[in-house]
Image (tube, rainbow, N blue to C red; front, side, top):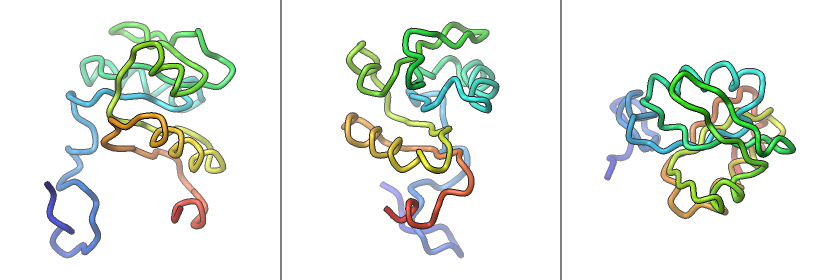
Length: 132
């Protein structure tokens, strides 16, 4: 589907431009949706993308909603609960602290065979975790 590398950059990224990172066609699950940064950014992203954030997770806060200009986004304790509630997604967005990114990505991959891409917003992830 994608050619290996971009001119002058020999690594496979799975995309040809930044416009491929997030599209209106993506169905998105946001990890840590009620966290400090994601609580602020997600409503704007959700409205801009036409409402493509399907649900979010926030351990211990399942049952809450994140209010946005284009509708509420349901919040579950984990990804499995969201899938069991009938929500389908193909893109995961990770707003977890560095120590939780590895487990968050593992959960996305483990429970959702329809996953196509993961966008990790977190900075300063340990090299060890990034390599796994």
